[in-house]
Every structure is written in C-alpha cells, then in structure tokens.
Length: 335
Image 1 (cartoon, rainbow, N blue to C red):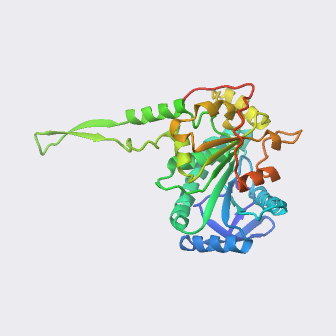
Image 2: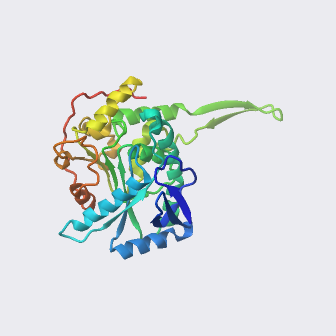
Image 3: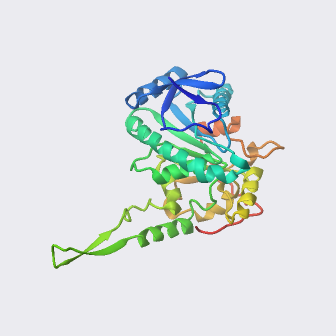
C-alpha cells in the first residue's frame, strides 16, 4: 500500500495510478495500480459506477490532496443529483504538488507546476499506452493553474495520437494568446531558426561533411510558443475554453505578475480578445464558452468548475461562443 500526505507539499516520486483510497486520518492510503492493469481497473470502476467515460481533473494552485479528493466527490454527487438523462462521466482526480512557500505565487508556476507536468508526462505515457487502445474513454478538466500544468505536459508529450476525447480548460491561468496566430507563428519561426548546420572535419578524411541537424524542425509542435498546438493535439474532439471576464482571481494574478515584468493577461479572463485571432489550424478545434451565467453574485468568481451548470456542460458540451471583452487587458509580450 502507498501512503501520501493530505497537503501534497511534501510529496515526491513518480506518477502512479491509485485505487481504493482510504482516509487514515493524517494521511491517505491506497493500492498502486500496475501499468498492465490500468485499463481493466478503470473499466471496472466505470462499470461499477454506471458511467461510460472518465473525466480526469487537474486542480489549481494551493490545493491539498484532501480538498482535491473532496472536490471530486462533490462533483460526482452534483452530477448524480442532476435529473434528466443518465450521466456519462465519472470524475477522477490527478493530484500534483501545489504549495504556497513564502506567500510566493511564483513558486508554483516556476517550480511545482513544471515538476508536476513532468510527472504527469509519465502518467500520460501510462494512459496513452495502457488505455489508448482500450475501450475506455477519457476526457480531462484543468482548472486555473492546472492548465499551466497541462500546457507543460503537452509540450513534453511525445505521443502522436490524441489522448483525450475532450479537454476542458476552466478559468485557465495561462497566457491569453496561447492559441493565437501571431504567438504560435513566432514559435514556428523560432523553431525553424533553431536548425543548426555544422561542418565537421574528419581527421580520417580530406572531405568535409555538411551535417544539418533539424532537431524536430519538421514537427510543428515543438517549442514553448506552440503549447496551444500541443494541447489541441491531445484532444480527439475539442478543446473547450471556459472563461468569465468577472474572474477577480485572474485579475489579481495579472496585477501580481506585472510586478515581475510579465504583463500578459490570462486566458480565463480575457478569452474574448483571443477568439478573433485563433490560429488557422485550430479554428475548428478550440471553442469558447462564456461562463458569466454560472457565477454567484459575490466572491472571486473563479471556482465555478465544480458547479451544477459546469457539470451539465461537461456532460453535453455546447459552447455558446459569446465574445465578452474584459477591462484592464494587457496583451503583454510574445515571449
């Protein structure tokens, strides 16, 4: 049995799939699922729950294991309580180390999130090899900074086939132009410029050999600025961007980052500016849904991912395509 803390901050190690999670008071205990058993275990879980598709959930910043697990329980209960048609989705958590060291918001973005994404790459390898060719369907929700984890994972993913049916980017804490023509085109140009041509003189030959190393230049999905293309490549169907201009948490994020020189607005608040400039290859793949109708009257208006209306959307996604432009928009740099 594997045990892990409820805070996530002290956890290290490889990504694993767990089953039969037990609350042990100050810790959790669970059985580790072997790679070769992943498909059959997930199939059984879906069958026992009466669902047909797994909906993996990547939580956001400063979320403990307990909160992540409790949130998933609530999401599944909310879905059960909704009437009408039988439900397709069973929400399952993906937990990463989210901390708040020294009140530093940058800690997670610069340290924990990239590490989580690398571990998630290992989990993705398991999912794509162990589950890709099985009958198990799977989609994914990434909330807030969980989208930053998703982006880094996508940029490191080496598979050439889609992993998920749909991807739901909810209140995404990533740059607003992640899917945009200009930003991605700059990334493509930079990738081409990274082609290195060297001349090697062999001491065993009088001839010089010109060796061109393209380093995956023929692959348009390399490079940091092409994270949007990489995310889209993970989805069989659509990438759904759920946003609201009233998101106060992302407005605070924008203000906080400006002190560090990063003046780029977040997609989860400023998607209205992104809708007209989506990369030509993604116009039918990336869709937008204004979630202003979901919001309560008070609060930060950031954590609407687990509400009943949001669950209805995940079950039967029909993007409204409403374009609402936020105030205090900062396009930032293209770096």
